[in-house]
Length: 487
Image (spheres, rainbow, N blue to C red):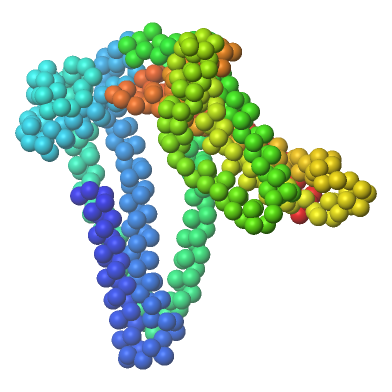
């Protein structure tokens, strides 16, 4: 049974338990709800929660743990002779999983008989042809050990699904009977439900931390796998990015990192002056009516999808730049995709980030500081330049750093506006690429997720994560220090 059907069945059992819990509590009070310790709804929720929480917890743990057990078991069935030179056990196991999924899909579509898919004596060459004819991905000719391991993997998946269904339903019905046994008039249902909800809220608050931890562990694990297949010295020491899934790849990060930082720098050159000047005008010079209209209108830019900015860069900014710097102009630009094209579009996208944060920070400067400056005879412009901006500078720097981390992680604008050329160049009118676009490129298509060319995406992601995390931590430190000073 698929997991989503099992989830719906558990929800149905919980709903039935809710109704039965209320009814049983009222029956114990002989129909007089005033004799109940808690409101009758609490008795229903007590049963529903005792059904849902244990059953869904078992389902989640099973979904996470059983694949690990299956992979470990099947990996032990693969003989060392099946791991060829230039390959690894992970690559072979990935081929086993792909074959097992192909067998399952082919059987489900009726293109391969179930008995044929389970036949351990089946000809691997014929099975390879059958799977390819069924439209399944098989990267190489199957061997008998790989085919048998895939059949075992598929059988374990079917057995695991059956056991999962039985265990989850037993836990759900056990929770149902447990909750119903507590549905009597003197049971403190309200206390139990509110305590349970408290723990659920604590768990929900912990999701952000656990998610971050999971992301970091996933990146670290796959990055280590990559460096086991590709030397870290070449990854950080090479100035060439030239992946080839056929072998002979050069996976140096520096061309990508340079493109990322260069495009982000151009974006900040556009966003910081415009955003900062807009914030100063809105906070110090604009009338309340104009501010009430202009600030929301400026922040609308933040709600525009990045793909729209990418199209704007490709269809408007690029042709505009090439009309000035292209063959008919200065002759410095050969195509519409360039660092300038993506940087200008990304800078426009970042304007509301800089302006909104800077505006809030400038408004947080105490009015007494302005009044003191005016009292000494300073004009408004002198007050802004010599009092307000120096006082708000730490917070403005934090806003700029947050915008920089947003620029470094951008993908769609770069894909459409900057091109895909990995190069080290100072010319802003040339096409370049970034870390994020290469991550997308390496993880799309029919790439084997156990190959160095696919795993390099995790090493790139880890590098980008460390870079943006450092910027965010530094920015938050500056902003918090400023707020402690002026709040």
